[in-house]
Image 1 (tube, helix red, strand yellow):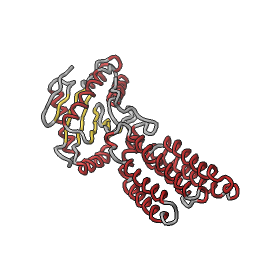
Image 2 (image 1 turned 45 degrees about the horizontal axis):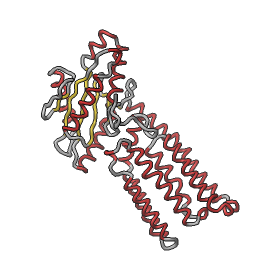
Image 3 (image 1 turned 90 degrees about the horizontal axis):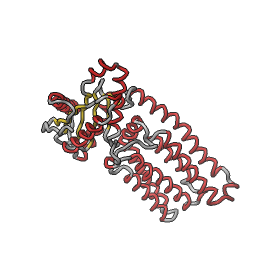
Length: 353
């Protein structure tokens, strides 16, 4: 049974491909977030002399939301929900309030309703667009028809133009997002287990290493190898071997949090990337994984895994060196009897249940 605090996906990131896309794009969107903050500051400067100070405060608040939405994601079980509700949804509400304060359907800010739709598409799958776009449309109707229906009846373009802009933006972005997710899945997902594969690892490790250097945090990796897997294939057949691999992947995946990224990097070998985890944290995670696999019993078999753990000595990480250390620890765990965890640095063993 998985731990109640562990991550099991969300409606925004329901698959490993969606999760990987969100994590990667969150990092790549730094420039876009900076541009958004600069834009909000310019709005505050230019509208303050011509409107109420409430609008300047609103623009400043939008700027703060962009900052808050990207803080502390590594500590959250579902960071995509945190970003959606603290940033995207609140920015939609702020835009609606700003439009209402600056003239409703006559506001020069009404075209801003398309921005949150683009923000959703840039980070999330089409599930995000299906939720985010109707919210923008509903708020748009509220601040136009709801605020001054008579003006909208006399000037229907005040509603039709921004409404068409929002809907068409979403309509064009939806196939682009779907195509991006599909191609990512084709190139970076393992067909048998649904986990990320080796091709997805270098880019993600480089991003994690950059973040670790900035935050002065370590990185740990955990290598897992199914014990006596060749014997399983030889005795029970490859179909049973595939069933075992799928069950092991599910057991591992069910015991992990969002930022603990799991990869299948070989036939029966898995790799776990742990940003910010020191040696003791990584050993604890690896032991929980060992227990999860040992209790899974796929195809009615007693299946176990051996684990090798390695941790960077500081914030500067070399992927090849770290993986080599974890591989050495994995072989040590195999040598000492399998179904155990070994750390490359201390060669500490957890007791076997």
